[in-house]
Length: 315
Image (cartoon, rainbow, N blue to C red; front, side, top):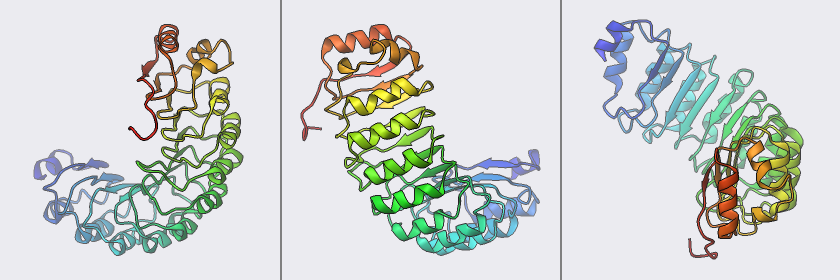
């Protein structure tokens, strides 16, 4: 650390991701060298148990100009410690915190509401519907990640979405079925026309009709992850190929009602090629061997992952 400070005394960005030995004394060394006051971006992602509220307190006192802060994967942080830090960083634009964020810390988001552009709260299992009230103040948000926040209801997320018209990235998937459903999807369709990346993994309550409405209106979509959204049919997926000319990743694993051989758009596969698709994940969907071979032959630029259909309950 001492060598870094001597060689690069005017660092504006530091990424300590995964540095398990980083602790308060290392940050104090930076403080003595006077190199903390100019920091704009710092990542402490996965630094582990040595990153505690003491380190946050030092960051708050000496890095008041921080705009981008990543605190993911530091389980020793308390929600109160995060709250105190946020109170000292008036220029914060991007924040990532897990798994310790609670509603207490989010109350301070209103202080950053006009500037906040990216908020990643994935894995914060303590967050409930009440926390979304505070996120709603950040009307300029372009990216919101709530993956693995399992206690949120469909109605509360749907009520949040109209407050975030600039949203371009919205991740709310999980490894298990979520409570997200049609209300959230309809809110996205009506309020977020510029959304580019959407992860609804295991939002098994979403119906084909609701998603068809979204895919017909949100033409800027580039990355769409729908693994386990098992109610979707061809009618819901087809508008993505018709309208989303920059679509590059489509994950429809375990969508047993999807069969691209039944799509009716532009000779099916030529339309897929026209989108510029680079990754099409079709594992365990209803595709026969001939269909798979035709897709791969007509879309050589696309990395296609296919596996035979596996009946429900065997994966």
